[in-house]
Structure formats: structure tokens, C-alpha cells
Image (cartoon, rainbow, N blue to C red; front, top):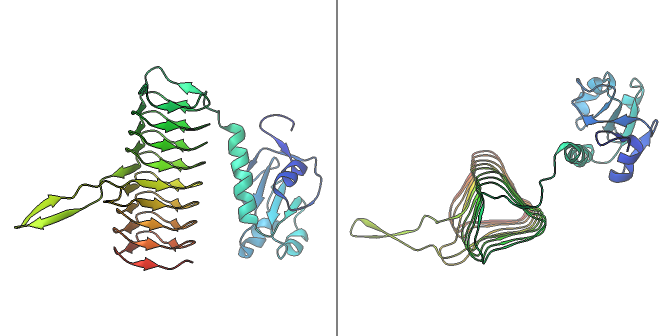
Length: 291
């Protein structure tokens, strides 16, 4: 690598695969849209309808599928990286370029943070300003807890998980490795449980937990309620957008994705590899099959 902002095309292909046509020594610094990419940037073609735009692109290299390569190559002079899934290749490369430019938080606990003496914070973790870590909580290797977060009693934050500023993670909740939780999310608030007696409501204590697997993304201001008796479960690889409500005792199967403003009522059981568009509403106590 020439410097911390540029990488040779050959190195990118070694990292992410694909078939390179062109000079492997070309250095690129970023990924940009087809119509705006310049001589030090790469772009991608994931929709065949955009072939004409790709052919006119000024990018140093294009990421494209085998079916698009012959037509684009006829009029585009830059390097080409041919791969079966250009969009996935773009996503991995974009992560790489972002990492080049993103400062790594210093390990340690900021002086303004409160960490209970019985909590365990790994020496490699970062705990930012004005964070609260309650008794018995565990923050594991490489975790990043940004400013103003709250980690409740006996909660567990997994390896390399990142809480952005002002996340609330209540008592006894658990999240696995490599999670991302964005600002304003509330994990483990009380579920909406009440009994009716004589026209008035009697609160039912919500004593379950929220259990979140590995590689889960949770968007800003999304809420996941703790279970009433059993746990609310978010399985590995789930992707939840902003402003989503997950009710108590729900189970969201692995690698399911939900767009913004989805609402899931209590005790819904959603399968693996499901997708929900924005503002979809799921009734309680129903089951949705895998895929």
C-alpha cells in the first residue's frame, strides 16, 4: 500500500477476489458513483440498465458482473474487476476504505465515565465520556462504547461490538460479537404487559432479557423490549433499521432484515432470512416461516 489512503487494484482483488483486467498497480483511494468517479476512484455496476453510464465513467476501475463485462469493455478504457456479486464486492471494499479513514478509538476508560467496581471492562475496550457501566456488567475485547451510553447491571457487550453515542442497554441484556447499535437505541426496556381489573390496568413485571447474537446491526432510535418471562431473541446477522419496535418475547430469526418503522408485536416468531419493507406491521403471537 502506497499510503494509508490508497491501495493498488491488485491488492484489492487479492483481498476480495474477482478477475482483474487492467494494470494491478493502479492506486485508488475511494469508491464513488458511476457518474462522479474520477481517476483515483473505483465504481460498480450492479444493475445492467446502467451499462451506458458505466461505459462513460471516468473511474479508474469498474466492478461488474460477467454478463455486463463484454458490452462495457467495448467502450470503457479503465480497469475492470469481474465478480459474480458486484454489490457485495462493493460493500466489502467500501468497509475497507472507511476503515482507512476512521480513527481507531484509544483503549481505556474515559475519566468522566462511571464503571462500577464489580463490572469487567477488557483492557482493549474503549469506554467514552460520561458512560455508565453498572454492577456486574461485562464489556469484552475490542468493544467500543461511545459517549453517554448506559450499560445496565449484569449486561454483556461482546467482542468488537460498537455502541454509538447514547445507546441504552438495560440490565442482563446480552449482545454478541461485532454488533453495531446506533444512537438512541434502547435495548431491554419493559415490554408492554398489563392485566385489566375493574377497568384499570395492572402492570405485569417484565423479567426476561434481550439476547442478541453476533453480527447484528440495530438502527437509531430502535427499541427492543425485554421479555415478560422468557427472553426476546434477536438471532445472528439480523439487520434492523431505524425506528423499529420489537415487542416482548419476540424471536427474530437469523439474517432477517427490517427497513425503517417496522413494528413487531409481542410474541411474534419470525423465521430466518426474512425481509420486511418500511412500516410493515406484524401482529403478535403469529409465526412467519423462513425465507
